[in-house]
Length: 310
Image 1 (tube, rainbow, N blue to C red):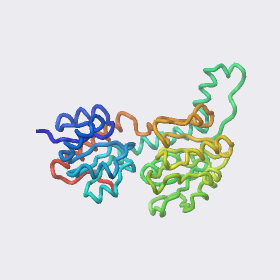
Image 2: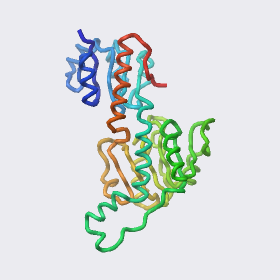
Image 3: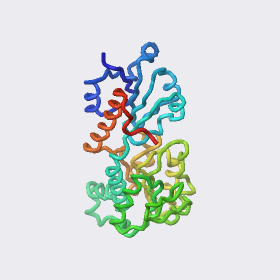
Image 4: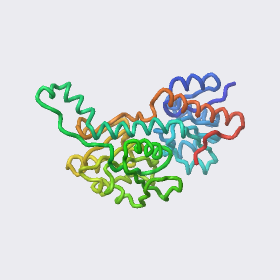
């Protein structure tokens, strides 16, 4: 009989099809409370994605759970403390999505500063016949501040070097192999940046890390780019800063309550928004799927997990 796996959140259809050849996937969303209670002891493995929430209560309700496999590099939705207490391993899919996320970060920086979306709408609405589009802001040679210099932050920094940007970063500690300027104070980094790029993980420790004082320090000529987690930014403070003109612009791929995006962030020439698509290319999603498969197979074969969380 195929081992049962609890599918707790949406995964790509090709990955589902591949898993179903070897395992019996049970969709958590379709289970009644009685069904779940009757079946809970059958699950050793839970599959989820990087946007979903795996609570302490769910972990405790699965007495034989041994592995939570996350489709995504971020795992802040998983109660990892509870997982550790219940001796449940957690895996994710790091590395394979770095380039795609870094590419989108640069794309948002360019699209926001040059108002590419608004400029297209200007043409489509007949504005060009009445005169030229307002001047926008230059990216090349500007100052880039990176909050969280991990794999993705480093990948963006290397791309930004091609634009002759001066680069500084804020981390808990400086990195010995990073050639860029280390700035330990976030407010100072924001004051000294034209573009503030967020690459930090989500979770309680970084919730609303980007608050009104940071946005004010970035200032009316500054641009916020977020490809990390929506929770990192105080979204209401961001909207207020944009409304008041104390922040210049924002490029956002992530939001506080996805998929709901406040109307106040929509239809603004100085805001570019995308629906959490930073890693959503065919090649990267296939590679992420393979990471999940590799971890699942390793678990059932009794081999070391391929990409356990740090």
